[in-house]
Amino acid sequence: MSSDSLFVGSILFFVSLTGVFTNWTVLLFLPKVSSFNKSFGYITWNQAFGDALQSTTVFTLVVPMVFFDLEVLKANSNYISLSMLLGYDISVLSHLLLALNRLCVVASPLKFETYNEKYTRPMIISVNIYAFASVIIFLLSGCKYSWSTEMWMFLYHVSNQCVSFSFYAIFCKYISIIFIIVLIDVFVICKARFMYKKSKNDAKSKQMNSKEICFLVQTCLQGVLFSIELICYFIISPRVEDTWVRFFMTTFAFSTIHACDGAISIACNSDFRSYLRRCSMKKISNRTESALYASRVDTSTLGGFRSRTSTINASAR
Image (tube, rainbow, N blue to C red; front, side, top):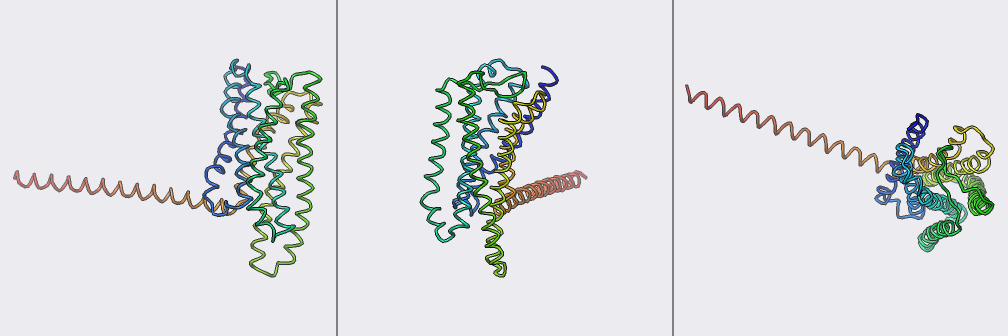
């Protein structure tokens, strides 16, 4: 194994490990938060599912393939990429649902509960079905998206059919979705600022608006990061000759986006952070109490042993 492969594997290891930790934290603990039973919570969970799928695939399959130069995984890297594309599809489409969610909140707050109850879960199911169908269509198209050891990235097989398919079915689709998300976010930001200024004298409304703005910041940050990643991957990287620059614009950016998604979801959700903090403090408290109890038991046991020893010695005398 070359030193370059070791370096690439180390980078992907730490990035994917971060993604696994943050996204699986959202998947496992977000449903336990009281605010989860709302539209935004369900969509965030579905987005974390897509991100976790991608990060876990990189961590369990791509990293060992690079580290140990496993020919078996390289030969089947096309199927590994399908899992990554599925996670990417679910994540991007969930971003679109989050943007629509914010739009409904600021554009029609009174009708938002109807949206929450009737449409959220069917939309999530539809998004996931579409993502699975897209992956199946890609598989049936005959195009392959395989790992290149020389460039440390997944590449489409060079053919007119695959190049056209990847451009229209992947790049154009994703860039259109991100463009729609950006337009929605710009409108929502303007509307949210107007609402915040209008209700700044009302303490209760101010607090609610602040929480909604945090959710808006989440969707905007994630949308901007995805836009940058798409531009770097499809537009800039084909024009770059340096292997390292291309690696950081493609494989590294692709994995980092999903790791950042989980971190942003945690950072922008105050209820979720409070829940994680309480859980951490509770575990620390329980461990401290267990340690104190164990030390008291040891002390009392030692004291009883000494007492019995003294009694025995006294009787002997």
